[in-house]
Image (tube, rainbow, N blue to C red):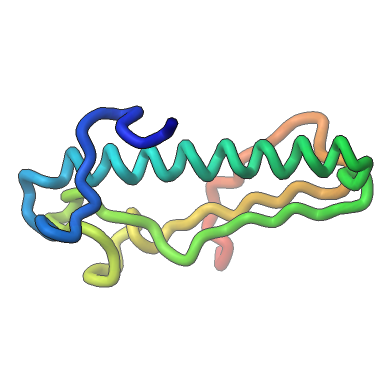
Length: 109
């Protein structure tokens, strides 16, 4: 149900690094993020249904970001710009939090 959700898609295998493919690659990426978000939501719901959410840490991160034409780069592994290096780190302690917060400072600061 997530495929095509954001428009025409291209996984980049045949057109990798061609600027005209970037919008379709971004659509595919957004659909994958949407799918992953749904799976994480289902995991959190299952933890709550099994009464495991009160004693379970949930930690989510990524190994890299993705470039979609920023700084003239496409994909990852070819630059050291923030769009590739900055990755999320989500921490949900047992029982959750009343409010969420975003920390803008880099982890090494």
